[in-house]
Length: 204
Image (cartoon, rainbow, N blue to C red):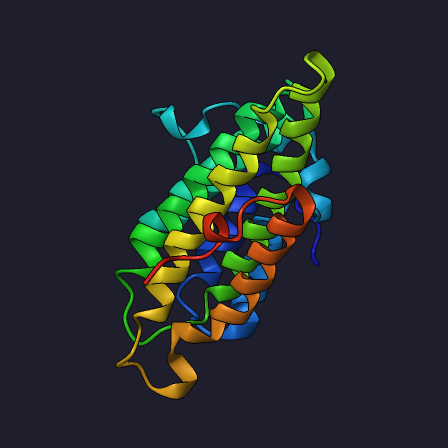
């Protein structure tokens, strides 16, 4: 992926991508919102509460992605600067909830953005593990640790419900294609912490 040279460049790059609306573009945006991408190591992107600033860069073409990028910068700050994985995990859940409400639920006959969703879920599982480790280190045996995975499973399950209800879209544009990935995400949470299977999958 092309290196990110500044915060202005980061926003401009995503701003130029959001209108293209194809799967390849979704992959590129996904990397820009992934904790596993090289950009996440750039100190100028480790910014706390960037979205609350009056003067800042913006994704002018898409308010939902603008907010996602700002939340992502807040996650990067908490991971790399504050080392506060509990706050980072909570912010990542906010990202998934926002993605569900503003993108999965509102954008009909589109699914090009699903690669972004897959990365958000993978990062949420990793952050939940790190948050669990923080709790375990402070108080060994504390059952609070599992609550991070439960909240992660709940956020993903809400998205599962949204995608499974997408019954009218054309085959190539249906959000149902995300169900296999979400099933894998939920199973990995279940296997890792032995949550009750009912916690990880939506009820009819």
